[in-house]
Length: 362
Length: 236
Image 1: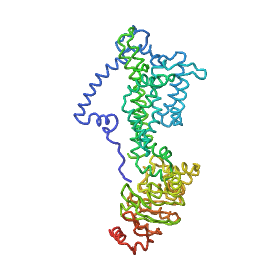
Image 2: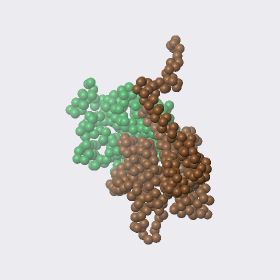
Image 3: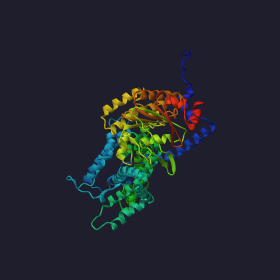
Image 4: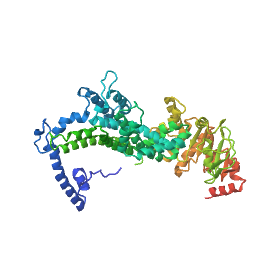
C-alpha cells in the first residue's frame, strides 16, 4: 500500500469549468471559434424560436386570431383531423386511434431498457399488429363498417404505406439476398434479375406502373384497389434494396462460420436462421434503418397517383384562400412529423446495435 | 480417393482405414493437402473419385447421408469458428438442441459437463469475444463433443494460438485421446504425435508418403521426403 493519500484532481480539470476549458477554450483559436459559433447560434436561434413559439399563436379558430406575427399554429389545429385521418369518417376514427395505440404499445417498450418481455412486444408489432390493422382499418368484417381505401389519408396513410413496406420487405429482401448467394444457378439468376430490375427503376415509375399500367394488363374483372397496387409496388421495390443491403451483411460473415455450422450437422435453413442471419442482420442494422428511413420519406410520392398521405393532405389545404400565408406552417408541421418518426427509427437502431454487439472489439 | 480443384489434382489416390478408438496424426508441409483431406471426411470439401465411408455411411451428393455423417463427426478448426453472437453455453447447446432435438435442460447439463472437462465451466455465460484464444479453442472442442461424436477431426487446432496457450489446448486433446476417442488430427505438434498417436501419416503433394507408428516414424523414417521434413521441423 502506498502512503500517499489519493488527492482530488485539480479544480480546473473537473466540473463545468474543467469541461469548458477542455472542450471550448483549449486554445486561442478554439476560443475564437466558440465565440463566433455562439454568435451565430444566438442570432439564428433567437428569431427562429420567436417565430415557432414566443410570437406564435396556438389557440383560436379563425385566421383573424393570428396576430402575434409568428407562426399561425391555429391553422394546423383546425386541420389536424384531416392531416391525421384523411377522409376517414369521423365516427370510425377510433379504429385508427386503436392502431396508433397498438403501435405505441409495440414499439415504445423497445426504447426502455429492462422493460419486461419487451421482445414480445416487438414480435407483436411485426406479426399481430399488421393482422389487426388489416382487419380493423378497411373494416367489412365482424360487423365493422367498410371504409374504402380511397378515404384513407394523412399521417395514417403514411404510416400504413411505410409500415407495410418495411415489415414485408425485410423478410422478402432476406430471401432474395439468400437466393442471390445460392449455389443453385436458376434461383440465383432469378434473384439477380428481380433485384437488378427493381433497383434500377425509380419509385415514382413503379407507382405509375402500379396505378396506371397494371390495370391495363390485368384480365377483365380482376382489379386490385389502387392502394393495394401501390403497396405491392412499394414492397417489391423496397425488397430489392433490402436484399442488397442484407447481401452485404451475408458477405461479411467469414466462411468459417458457415463451415462450423455445417460441421455441426445444421442444415441450410437452420444454419442461415441460427448462425448466419443473426450476425449478418446485426452487421447491417445501420444500412437497413437507413433504407427504412428513406422509404418512410419516399412514401410521399404516392401523391402523384392521387393518394393523400400527410404531405398531400397538408399541401391540399395550404392553398385555402381563407388562410393567407400558412404555407410555411404547413410544411414545418409535415417536416416535424417526419422528423419525429425518422429520429425514433434512428435512435432505435442505435439502441439495437449496441445491445446486439457481442463482439467486444472495443 | 481423389480430389481435384478444377484441373489441379490436390489429393491423389489416398487410402486410409481408421479403426474405432484409433488416434491418427497427419503432418506434412503446407499445401500438401492434409487439411483438404480431413475436410473431405465431413464433406466440407467434395471428392470426385473413390469412396469415403464414415461409420458405414458413404458420403455422396445425398444431403441426408451428409447430415448423418456430420452428426457423428466433430470438427475443431484452426480459427475456432465459435459463433460470436452466442454465449459459450449457447454455442455448445446449439447443435444438440436443433440437430439432435435434445431437451434444453439435458443439453445444458451435457454442455456444462464438457465445459468442465475442458476446464472452463466458469466462462459458460461469456461471449467468445471475451475469451483468450486458448479458451476459445477449448470451447470449440467442448462444442464438438456436445454432439457426442464418434470421430473427432482436428484441423491444425493450435496453429493460430500464442505459444503459451498451445499447452492448455494440447492437454485437453491428450486427455480426450486417453479417454478412447477416435481422433484424426492435422497438426505440427510433434510432441503431441509422439505422446498419443497410434499412427503418424506424412503427406506431401497430395499423397500419403509414409504411415508408421510414432516411434518408428520419428526415429527411423523410411522415405527421403519424410526425413527431409522431419529434419526441417525438428532442427530449429
